[in-house]
Amino acid sequence: MARMTSTLRMDTLFPSFAIVALVALLVWSARYKPRSLNQEVQVWAEQLGLKILKKERRYIFAGPFTWDRAGAAFRIEAQTNDGKRLSGWVKFGYRFGNKEAWSHRVVWDQ
Image (cartoon, rainbow, N blue to C red):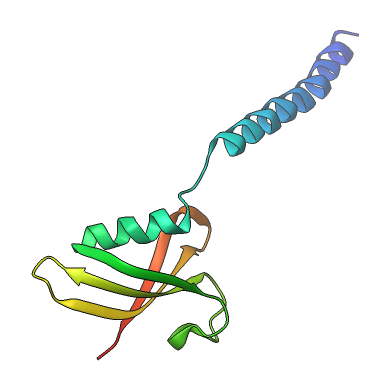
């Protein structure tokens, strides 16, 4: 009879653990807010020492990224710290399996 009660406890322990884990996951996902695309472009530019002068998100005609639909493409104009102006395309997207790690590809105009 003692064996039956220990089995019964294990049967009730697993669903309780699963519920606690699910609630913890829901709370974490509700509190986690990834940066917006605008913030991501700004952070990327600051890391390279660029000042964004003009930024336009492109949905259909996205330059070299027109056929690459994963992520978000932007047409940008920027200025370096020494005053040089650059224009080109930048595409942001999540790395596979990691929502915090952004990848980016840049194609500058010649």
